Length: 153
Picture 1 (tube, rainbow, N blue to C red):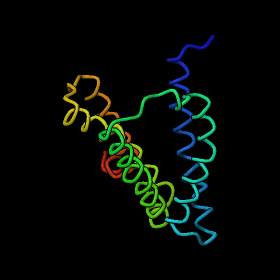
Picture 2 (picture 1 turned 30 degrees about the vertical axis):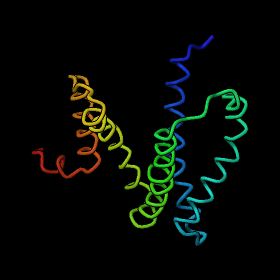
Picture 3 (picture 1 turned 45 degrees about the horizontal axis):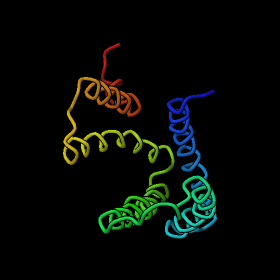
């Protein structure tokens, strides 16, 4: 069958596709007059309702030991700052800058992940990371277009 690595890569591709649709669909929802807070709240409640049964079946949390205080604090921080606040910000930027400009932010996700990995986790900056950063920079420059307009010819 399909290995776990292939499934993981497919999950990343599907997540990227969902991110794109989220920006486009979010624009339609905002046109209905909902606030960024209202949209974010609805999105997180709906996803929780969908994923709770899946998590209960897949993880069987009743068989796991209780997490420590540090883990509980980390989960609360992830839920509030990295998820709830991030989605409120996401939909506010969507309302002011539009879906196309909002999606450009996704270029910065690997950059911030790399920086945090190096600064907090002590990961080592490798050649492939630099190549990836250069690709991201080239992509942003190509999308922006100002650099290409300055080239002769």
